[in-house]
Length: 78
Image 1 (cartoon, helix red, strand yellow):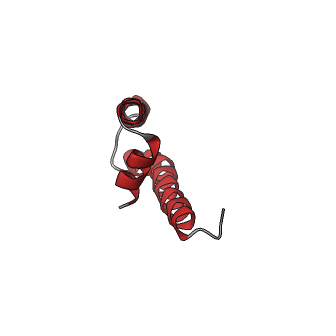
Image 2 (cartoon, helix red, strand yellow; image 1 turned 60 degrees about the vertical axis):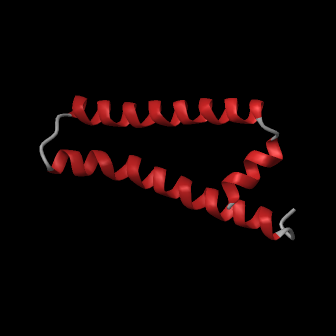
Image 3 (tube, one colour; image 1 turned 180 degrees about the vertical axis):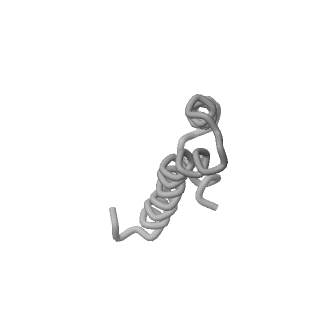
């Protein structure tokens, strides 16, 4: 699989996206505390971010159900 350049591109892109999400979840509490947010406010921001990710995954699942899987992957990789 790793010899296919399209698979490598998808793996690299998804790795960068996951790195960004992890960095956000790590640094948001530090930054929020630094600017004076309460712990519950920071928790609400992180919870809303997670809810947004879940909603996006549900929308993607509906899109895959409507279109063919290869079509969606092609749309996402360009």
